[in-house]
Image (cartoon, rainbow, N blue to C red; front, side):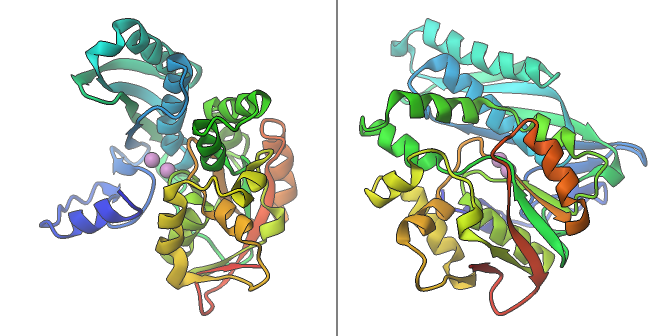
Length: 326
Ligand code: CO
Ligand code: CO
């Protein structure tokens, strides 16, 4: 499904109302937030998808890192996870076991536990997690609180969609594939925890909607304009090259359609750059809004874990469009 489709369908149903649900489907945040007490909120999220890499153990790691990420993007700590697995029995139980082992290792690294799950027979394998986490109410990061004067920090380089497309076509050099899978397996835990205690006005993780799609949700929800500096956006090696060569995943075009009405693009921007900014990410980095005076400290801390983290733009008062590329 394209960006926002599920929210649109749910909006047609009679609304739920529970005052303890602090973040729900009315917004476009990464996870739901439920107030348990004045000191504690529960964060809940779910994510699963078909294999993005051939190796089942690696796929399990990537899918788990991706699912856990939404808890980190809300400023929380994951505690319990449940497996979601669909699998064709003809592929053999060993591969299914490898997927689960990859997922379990990431959940362990996150300091959480797998407490069960559900599996079904399906033509195509799919794997992911439903994750529950916790946070203090005043430490929650939402994606709709960006403020004028914030700078935007992106913690991981873009390009996993482009590289995965090149991989499927058999065009990706093995050393680039290694870099791509290592990045997709890396938990956003370290980048998130490194800035706990600093003023983070808003945060989201960059996944299927691409940098521009997630930036639009943030800017629109916050009533501001986000200005993205295209030449500051970090990318994986060869990502721009594969964009120029036309290895552009279908999701990239859907993401461009999703943002087009709210996007201002300079006429001289190379098409490959736009493809990169719309590239759907698997287990992408965090996009953080931090007031400018705290950015040097934030960047120093994040780069200890994510050396390619960079300031990719800034937040201004709402202009004609919600997202501007410069
Ligand atoms: Co997310
Ligand atoms: Co998600």
